[in-house]
Amino acid sequence: MTLPPGFDLDGFVQRTLAEDLGQGGDVTSAATIAEEARFTAVMDSREEIVIAGLEIAAAFFRKLDPQVDLAAMAADGDRVPAGADLMRLSGAARAMLTAERSALNTLQHLSGIATFTRRYIDAIAGTGAVLLDTRKTTPGLRILEKYAARMGGAQNHRMRLDDGVLIKDNHVAVCGGVAEAVGRAKAANTGLQVQVEVDRIDQIEPALAAGADRLLLDNMPVPVLCEAVALVAGRVPLEASGGVNLDTIRGIAETGVDFISVGRITQSAPAVDIGLDYALT
Image (cartoon, rainbow, N blue to C red; front, side, top):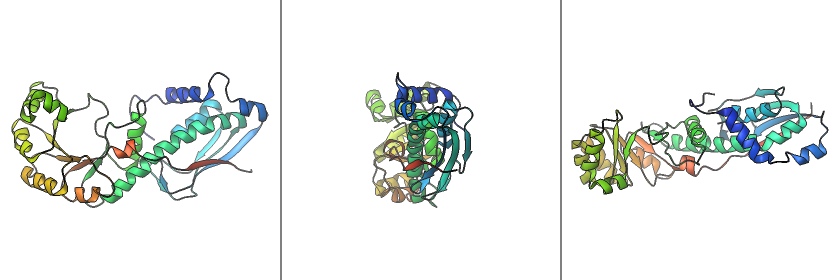
């Protein structure tokens, strides 16, 4: 598993466990489980999923029991059927039960994003269009959610506001027009490509004349997207965005756009069902 540079795995694990432990710790496990008890378990998928975050889940168990015996049975990015074993573990029972929910919450959420993303990837297979994620992520979890989108097959768009110049409709409104906004962005000499959002055909030529490096075609119906693709004729890459779902993405991809950005894959992905069950040795 390769997480983006700058992701603090240990810090994430500590913060997540602290949120769950509170001031008193796992009072249930402390009250019911003998200190020397061992816990052997199998983590498995209860539906077909694409995995993301398996090693992050493992980090929770290792944090509370550095001697835990862990064996991963799959890897991030794998598509596995219902009933597939993902991980086997054996360690101190109190520690394993304390870490269980944090580990599962993380893995279920990230695998949910990867699984949902793969459905979009499958829907546009063979079209040549590339699926992009967006900045529509859970505050504080962007690095992980975008990682999960990659595991599902998408490419990451901007990670942060300093990753690229993307002129949206409100920028255009404040500047007084597409050409004015693009001109100012080019004059700023950021060293970054300038992408501009257009929602009408008549904005395309002014944007290109002002030096736009890429166009985001926002909320355009399929016939208008086809017109835009023909008009641009390969001069710059085109990205379609807005109102994209599993029912519409194939038709959008077949217009010939280069990219399709979908906020839903991180914003609306349901968690998947993954369990951790005691196993007799």
